[in-house]
Length: 115
Image (tube, rainbow, N blue to C red; front, side, top):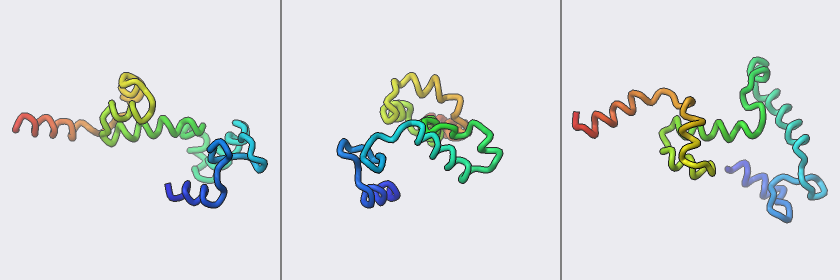
């Protein structure tokens, strides 16, 4: 968030509140976002990662965020609210991304049963 705050402090926002705008205050086109995204991936990732589907589109970050929240144990109801989903969506779409929580789940059950 600090980077975003610094950016806004330096460049401001468009009149309608958009964070990113063209030099003349216009809407940045999807092609421009795609070009910058592709260049950023090439700088940040290994060649193997660039060739993979990992974060291929900016929208993929939404999926990564939801998956991360679920993996960190954020309740599905909270994840759904934050992502603007129904409660059903995180469990149907993202449940396959949840990994490594069996031991934690077993401990919670044992604790609840007093074992």
